[in-house]
Length: 599
Image (cartoon, rainbow, N blue to C red; front, side, top):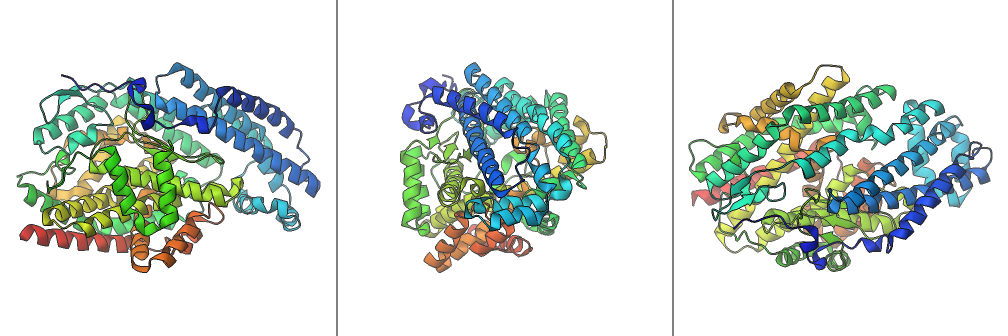
């Protein structure tokens, strides 16, 4: 008997999200498309919007009301597309939404250069004298801060038109990775031939059966290796695209451009890599322990995901997972818990994998509607933590959207990963604290150690890879599949050292990381993890006062820079201290686990 992945229509509706909360009828979406096209034409007439305060206010409101509709159309179209990337109807709708977004960006491209041609005193004077313009204050302050990187109105108009194709590399990779890439059948734990997929790979790689792990590992990376030249060409074009925008916008590097968007000093990135590199000996100490506990002569990369302690049931039904998450997040208080349950019960979540569905997990929201979460749930502990993680994003969006106006509701990614990972940290600490079985506790500690390895160490390794390859692209160096594989393989050797047999197959892992197409994103998982560990411990220690500070942060949207917003919650990410504290906790957990294995 073969375990084939189900078609979407075979999944019960109670495990699917309900997009009718965004548009109850798709004819309403088409009406909004028409409104946007009319509004874009009207925006084109706003060339003299800065002449007086009233024209400025009317134009700004028109622009952002239109942007909201574009966001809503784009959101719905892509959410439906991600349900099944092979569905031609929503392929078309997604493409049309992308084109509409491009039209909006092009149609408003004159606005920023026009505003920047005025004095800051004049524009901010309008804001100071009219409370209805207060919602634009942060946006305008940030715009003037980045003035040196904004081009002339004609140049901005040309750049805006590139929106129609600038996401091409990411789109091609997504379709190839989720639709066209065909993985082979492999034997599962029961000896049943099962089709390997992105969704079930984790189940295979955590199997107690070493042959099952190795076969799945080999099948995954050998499949990618067949297309390494194509995948390299796609990714290199993404790197070149980023280098192009950085150069024309007068940034010193792609990295500076992407970090500047959130006012993140480059030192934050450097501090992360430097601090984690200094702690590589701790990672290698953990690997030595894993090798000892697993009683293997050689530790391979397909051995690092399997739990060292097998005392916890791996079959966790979705309903049980929801109970575990709700219990773990009780320290966040009654209000937070009620929002969590609303998400569980009211079709915020698309739960199970189906044919053509986008891989991985994410939370996404559009202003005026509740957030949504995409999962590809598997009955394992990792998926339980994915629920906690994505609901952290969702509730952050819920608080932000309900406490900020549209303009200030869209918080930066840098702070987003704090909210999600804080949930995970609270959940694991709850499970560890309530465990009465020594083996179960050891299992959970091992799981948390793995979170450090995969989030703080692995994501920082990803960040190093991005830094290296983007620098090469920025400087015009030649890149190909061989150089990408070599760079990635050498980083694995650096992090894992002599404690690991670094299998050659891992050189292809870069090719299956979708986040690399959102440049300089992954480092925020590591910084977010560090901040989340500090905040979770603060919440558990101080209780309600810490929760209230944390919720003030969640409600703040983008009303200040990410670094300043995190200070509201009690963490200063401009310093090395949060990463150092996280490494201290990793060391303490490692000590405790070593003691438990010596008993």
